[in-house]
Image 1 (spheres, helix red, strand yellow):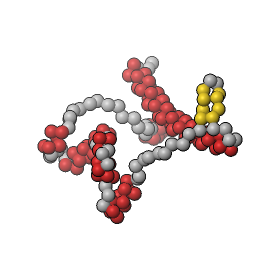
Image 2 (image 1 turned 120 degrees about the horizontal axis):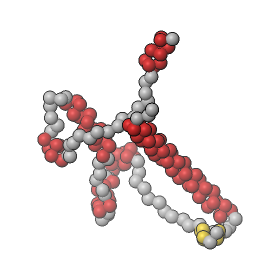
Image 3 (image 1 turned 30 degrees about the vertical axis):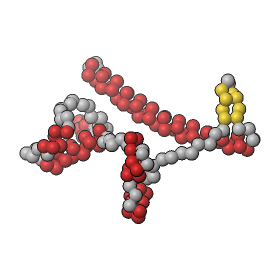
Image 4 (image 1 turned 90 degrees about the vertical axis):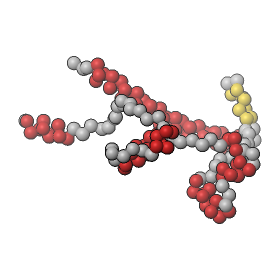
Length: 159
């Protein structure tokens, strides 16, 4: 008979699997949408039909200028060559208010955990750092593929 704990663990695993599946489906959907959008744009140009109405919605060809930050490598090279810093340029152009200095929580967690591990149990994290962090313990569930080789070998040796 299955325990309630085992049942809850299976439900938890199903949710983790579903989350991963949905992330993959979203990536696939976005890629398919982008390709189809480009195919439609090409067809509208080829057929000289810049707009069309389908099922009560008007779809029209439009051209947008897209702006995105260059890669970190390209920006580092630019700064080395010209002295231009991306964030300084934004600030100089009056765009400093769009800059959001952030730290990914998962990156902070893994980096500080590694730092503490390097320091060892007998040493504390720097005081300035601990004053800036919420430090607490939390019970979590770790999911890893089970290693059943030893159990399988034991079962075989009993036969």
